Image 1: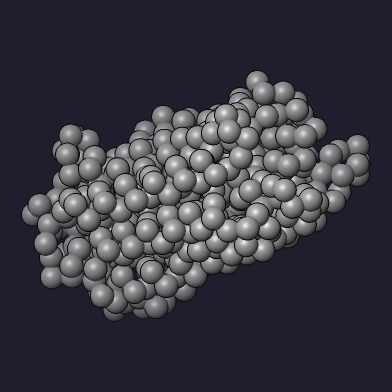
Image 2 (image 1 turned 60 degrees about the horizontal axis):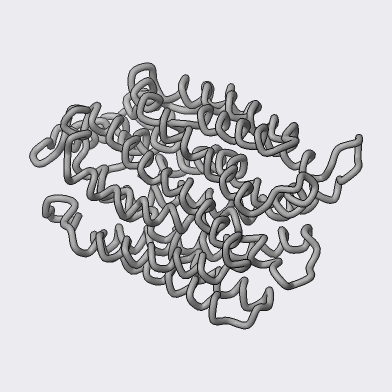
Length: 419
């Protein structure tokens, strides 16, 4: 399993860094782009969130196609097309083109994340899955750590070649997805039985291990119809909806929150925005590994939710300085990101076959509706109140609701591993 982790996770991690940066680099461009194009908080919040509406609409069909034609081909297609639209963000001139480009980016990227989660269920037994998912999803945090200084440097290219700094940001950061698409076809291995980089004994063992797990269908859903009509699946989706509202509610507004009232330049604020993402990386690694070690899942989702809520409340109460904001938002990021590895062990524990392909996509679709709600909610509240206090309080409250749901409802059957 160590060999599998080293072969798969770093490459998937790289792909997800590119994917997450291409959807979230809008937050780094926001300060300058909104000023240049005259976008108010509501326009920016809606444009940030509309990506998730189109992503949600096309996610289940995309994952079903992936399950039929294979991960390698479909992920390569997704990456190439999303690279095109991520780069095309440089041509935004008004709210209509802004909404259109973000909507098309969501269409292009639909299915990437649930496709990779499905892929991981073919390689990692349930007892090791929280760590694997957590390590993979660390990319969402590292995209901020890496993307912040890169984006800050690109914003300084303002005026080069007649382009604004934020246009250079979208142009340069959209290209890696297109470059990596053919690499996916060459490097990714579809199934353990195809892994020539494992010995024959290792291939046979892992193939038997995963086949035995997938054959355990007692208490599980194996057909798409059973998954889509399962109350258990819809219930387990609700905490994820809450988590993603907070996740993107802060991700798309982070530089703007830090800059509020600080007088710091946009490039410096973007650079400093890497700090909460470092805390988020720690949350993913620490909570996911501890969850696998103990075999406990629900408290490892609920506890970080409460830590995230505490971070948002502390941001409201702390003095309005960049240092305090970065500290309290780092606490929030540790908690919110820390939920992700343990959370994804919950639905994957009772989904098999086509139910896994469609069910994972359904859960992520419901979550991604939270990706629309979060940025738009914060923007709308800021428009109405002139500040971030009420918006951050709303995100904290939503995380508490998510924690309560996780602890109140048994989402999976009892097993020897505590799942």
